[in-house]
Length: 66
Image (cartoon, rainbow, N blue to C red; front, side, top):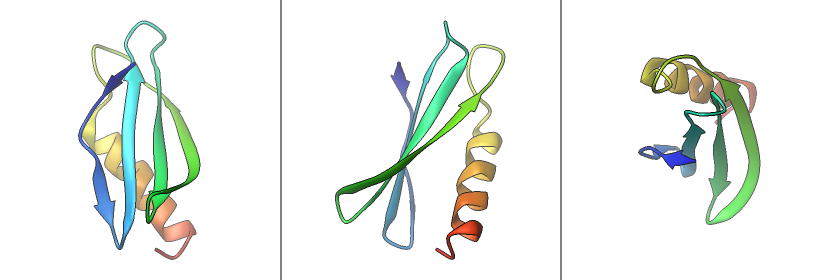
């Protein structure tokens, strides 16, 4: 698994990681250092698109009113 830059939104931390071999990844969501949940995703190519990761974070924030 490779880890890419974390995204911070209103005190929540979103840490993406992915596997090029498996063509999947996850975004680990935490708040105040406490793990909340994992958002899983699939992708194609060498790396997941940053815009896709941002969209998943945006959707999560909207659904959870963050």
